[in-house]
Length: 251
Image (cartoon, rainbow, N blue to C red; front, top):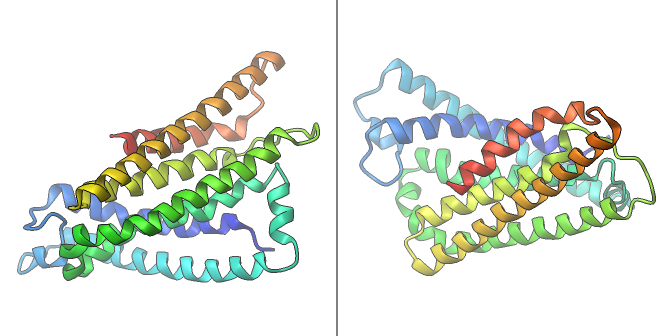
């Protein structure tokens, strides 16, 4: 049975693709604003070749998974009321943020690994950010709409018990990923107006992530005080994912 959480595989492959790019961007000499494959002319070694191969394979895997799972998602969403039932269930609907997280990673992969292998695109990235602000704004609005839809089921759950899982902070992670993509647009854009809009949306995304994390953190604290022990043992690893991510977006 299909679940939106399958987008996590695309997120993982995108993260693996992004790591070599970030490492090379900050440690290898390059002529343009972003490092590209042209910067390695006549100076390949085993380490750089390994990083480039990992980045290429992971980038291809990311786009393959995004396309494949997106098609499956569209088919699933149009199968009767499957999407409506999923969104109405407060125990599992947090998974709807997984596609947003994966698409936020796609934006970062485009600005990083794809630009690396396509030098002409890499040089044009600052100019293209003027157009990139529009799909980014749509992603931001989609995340806002999803947050409201999920929050409604959280506050009006007819007394149903809460099931804490690792995915309970997935909405915080989604706001952090969108903030990270916005920060990339802000830094790369040459148009002052585009940079200003992107920075405002980034600030809102960071604030929303921290707000939701604060509300859920307080809720967990109150639950623990009332019950005398932690109710969310499976949730603990999620803190190590979302907190550094939000801090990275803020910086």
